[in-house]
Length: 535
Image (cartoon, one colour):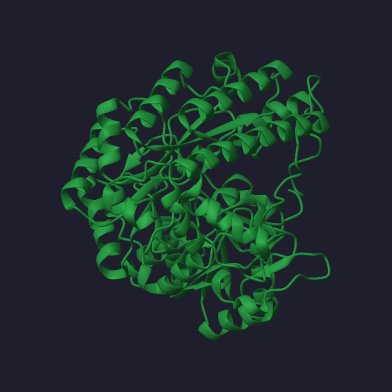
């Protein structure tokens, strides 16, 4: 079978980092393509999101930027490949409209092409893709590698795919979802992602142009960044998280030798210099994580890494944090979520102890490990005082330990416990489905979707606005203090400053700031300090 896997273009309200478009390699499609190749199919990946030139990007009549191939060119490129099966990526809920549009436009010209959609939102809400126009034939729920291969086999044999586990579809009687497919036990049985099918240099160019896929420090060569995933699944029960719907609650991992093989491929063949370790629970098995750190240190690679998707605090001893530091980690991102223990235990169900959290963050400060701390507010059951307690805790971590807070508003994602609580309690300001919001990259949902007796959307917005202003003021003061203590860094900061008329002065300043200035003095070892311009 000829199979084409596609990542759609998107619309964005802004071109400014960090709110603008994110590119990064399409990890899910790379795994799918590698597996389908091994099964004997002819496979290609068309990343329409990166098929554009910046000179052609302009605001439309509604003030939005189209990022990626124009729709007509995208359809032409798809049809030129003549696929039997078109697999369309849908990694985020806000991209559902784009995914459906790809299927609709292709079906309008070649209705015989079988269209398949997968991803987290497709797993949670398959019915939102199986629209009346029947532009999407099948939705793959959960892990896609084996299920997509079975769909291809069924179509090739003429048996049809409507009885396969993990598949949803529509017929004359409505939408049907078969029982879920089992999760993959041995992740090492999966082939390494098919990087040879995507334009790797294009992703590096976009990072160099100011669009990293995740937050990162800049140094010469740091644009050669890639996200990798070394494990799947999460056994925890955070009320707002839907990861278990797509990847299950049972944690499964690649072996350390397999992870090292994966990293070596990217380093040797593509010159990768920085890794975003995107696992939800990379340190769940402390012995494995410790072994991975030891092996990375032994390799002596000229690389850096981070945990941009977060890492749990549990079990991160000073000894283990020392190894994290020595293996050239640029920052750790901790999901703390609330600054009130009762909220964590009773509402969020996080399983994090705030005393332990502050101790770990304090150790990171002593060791010189940068920390980002994630917080979420606006849950049903929270009061103004509860939310203010989270603000106070976040400010304390910033003042004392330089832990940069990132504040999110609670979002009732479909099929999560939070969504069910909000639905039953009447807390939703509007239905989450079928209209999930504007469909734009930075306006996935209305700003506040939850309203309780304790707060209105307007009140929550004002509280959060004051907190954010406090954080900006603190960070600017700390940055100024750091510059006064390190005046030798100013020439390198000036060199980082690259004015781009298309994005303006504000974006140029932000690029310098987000590119590693902040107020940090702990840029790893001496070699990296030189690269970052600290020495």
